[in-house]
Length: 393
Image (cartoon, rainbow, N blue to C red; front, side, top):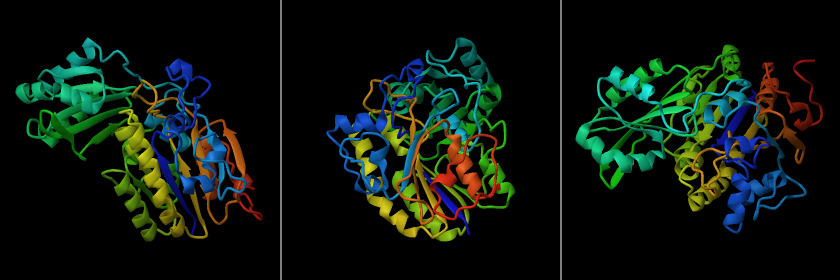
């Protein structure tokens, strides 16, 4: 009864990629910079697994006997957004980047959208979601015009107060934008409530994503009649494809609770969880203290996860990109991602080195289930305990 659990810490990168300068991310290092800025991080459980063996992290020492195998991976796909990161982890490498709008949406795009929804729109520029709501929220309440904005990702986000534009109407606007801009990675509904000076986004966010252009490991697992359960925003990034059960979460704490609940319910297959607060709540807002506290909460919770692992389970702790809260930028950063691999059948202390692609993770998981994927090189033989025989021999 083989089971793989992926716990993805969204935005927790571990150092700039060689081409980071092209993306304006020279010097980015989410874990490294954060640890130095705060005088050290205290993550004793991740330390015992070998997190400090991947890169220098102040306060997280390298250990001579890590409980897990460890390494890091580079991204081959262009860009630094969640969609390409998750797709590549599951074996799909994108050759052409999704369009982004660092200077804001063009006049033509805005006019096209406004004509389709039959009303003007506010905004149109790159912004933090919470900031633009505070900036334009009062005008939005007065005019009833939706607020549109973007980020470093390939996204067209539409924010609206629930008392002004009902939820279903907001979703319909997103469906309209999805048809208007088919090459964009995601159209995102961002409902909020409250009054000026005290606006608050609600959990009813909904992503309208571009579907993967080719099969991913999720599709192949589902085709093999294996459970594929996603927790968090994973389904948004894959347009719900290749998934047998979708579980949404309110925040990291809710996500961690859901992981433990699902582990009690499923006996085999893939459990793929995204803990998004590192990215949306702390990384994009350059909240260094919050980011560090979130890491500590995850570290405190981690033993609960490890205790639930069964003999045939493999746990992966990874990320999808960086979101360095110590730099002036509030956007994602193009970074390596850390990899920790743990389980009774996994060797301790194997350094898998620097992988050329995130898809090596998907290839490794695929091999464990007897599935070959198009991209990536499996490192399963090097981390599996003595007696491992490849499914592909």
